[in-house]
Image (tube, rainbow, N blue to C red):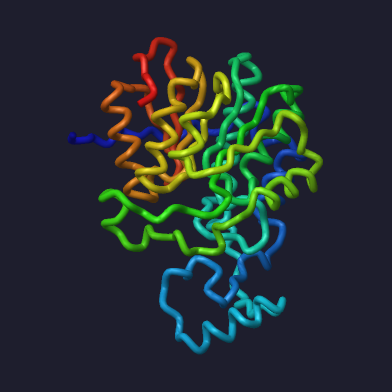
Length: 301
């Protein structure tokens, strides 16, 4: 099947309360690590983004041996506020790598859901350290919407190895061995607890999306956030869960403009199911759309 990229419109500027609440703005800066200039530093033991690039074997051996003993070699790097705003670097410290603008969009979405009383829960598929979900939970509590369930779906073991052609054609997309992306469910739960955000409405779905999501029962969704990077992972979220998103609800895709496999999956799914809702460019990486009031029926595959 051919797939046509959907036309994109820039996200409208923040209006009203969004972007002006000092508590929420501080939360964004803390969760993205923007309050720590040292968060731009990087480990030199292959743990960070360069895991898939070859290191000299002897150097790698010593760096990994030291890391196991609690000694880290870290390269000091200049903190680039623009990169952190756009989410184009990976913070050594911090709870989210999505950047401030994508958190701005989540703020607008959650405030809209609350103001318009759009029914349903929230689900994020692909959570890393949990920062984006922590932000949504804190904002829901702040707005008196803490009764909504917040679902965190993840393998909690990093990314799967690419298997399908849209993912395997670019070897840079194989981050299955990247330790930086492997965050345990215990760590994410502890992060929520550290911020006082862990309660009975925070639910975890552990497993590869293809295994866990077809049997999940998150209920109706006011917001579905996809951060699976790969074509296969993106499809594994859309097929069972898109039908759960209520009219007026938000579908947020973290890597549409950064990962070709993710973009291909979104375009293919929207074309197949005749989804014509306008898609908005958040920051040159992420996009979102709202489910129209009268949408074609999408049955789970």
